[in-house]
Image (cartoon, rainbow, N blue to C red; front, side, top):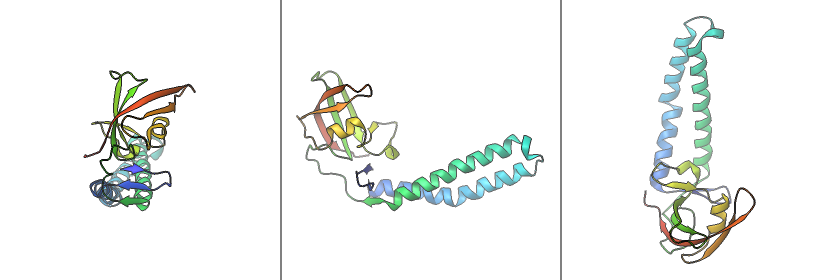
Length: 165
């Protein structure tokens, strides 16, 4: 899954199906479950000092926020194929860079929306400073981006391959 600057999110069919299933669960069975938790906690008595009730209400709020996020994300999604394996850095690519020309100091990351972040691979948004700097570059190109302290850094693109999940 990747985001473009037009606020459209590109999703593989697999990612779309996964997020759609999560939305269906959260807006169906999960809502029923949380309503039951709230009702059970409410029956325990004084709501001002009822930790279970307040925890369930907080969980409900987080769940409803996630439903809104998923709805907005899926409404703006474009489902399609993974990007071409042409060595051009773009959303949906696994990119390996070398910092300041040092081929031993490398970073491999998925350029994608944070929504698609996983523990398997570091994820950088196309809107992040590094993402903006490398987007559109080809393997072998150098790119410059702004560090959080305002200084600029150079990287060399070593590899750009489509993400395969």
